[in-house]
Amino acid sequence: MERFAVSCFIATVLCVVNLAPLITLEEERQFKEWMTEHSRDYSPAEYYQRLQIFVENKRRIDEHNAGNRSYTQGLNHFSDMTFEEFRNIYLMRQPQNCSATKGNHVSRNGLYPESVDWRKRGNFVSPVKNQGHCGSCWTFSTTGCVESVTAIFTGKLLLLAEQQLIDCAQDFNNHGCMGGLPSQAFEYIKYNNGLMTEDDYPYKGQDDTCHFKPELAAAFVKDVVNITSYDEKGMVDAVARLNPVSFGYEVTDDFVHYKGGVYTSGQCKNTTETVNHAVLAVGYGVEGNGIPYWIVKNSWGTDWGMDGYFLIERGKNMCGLAACSSYPLPLV
Image 1 (tube, rainbow, N blue to C red):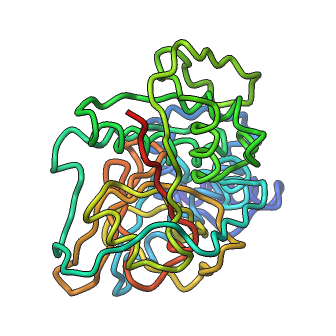
Image 2 (image 1 turned 180 degrees about the horizontal axis):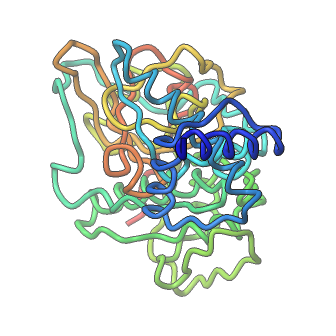
């Protein structure tokens, strides 16, 4: 009787705030555990709103994992958000047409290793970072690539300043927390004569005025290399022979709760006009079931995905990942 009464109370409250369907006691218990794990605290009204969103996300995750999929989903720190909320906070809101007609990357003919992982080749990949509540993914893709390229040439891995790019790179068609492109950020670094370190220009995760100090510039770009749009083989060539590569692609709602495995989607598009997120390819490989994939460093913290990384199917321009890839040449 007590269980029935509590269930009726929950159902009544949900109807009052126009939320449905009925939520079980077990689902609410899971939500409270999730709240504790992620240090969430809501007002009474918001509690039921977030509970409903959480349950809907959890049910979709469970349904996905019950199928025969190439990747799994799981709860994470985004699980109390709708995709619309997530998109408005974490993805690039300023439209980015990243088409780079004919690129200037020159591929070599020849055989490439079956798998490459720059994390295992030396101290060439910086730790996963967290962009926070700012659509600054493009800055993390940029710094991650410049950090790796510089480390490969100098042997010294620096942590570079995303905040400088947020604050200072607007003249190169970038828009701070609203979005931008790594190729345009590389151009900024080239013509700005350098990028400072995180220690000298700390990350705030919000738009601010430019405080660049030329005398503190720590990394430099000699030139920018664009890989021809949709030339995924060119991306393989660059990652196999040279260094990690920045790329943009389209995030759709089935990606937010990615947990592991090789991500593939029928929801996302593969054109240059739909790009809304930028990341860093640090390697590639082939799954045991024969699916080729990219190893990708994200900027949503280490609690997301595979310690901050994900695998995405390679060779099909999945979600437009080959539409606009690039990397810098270091000036050392």
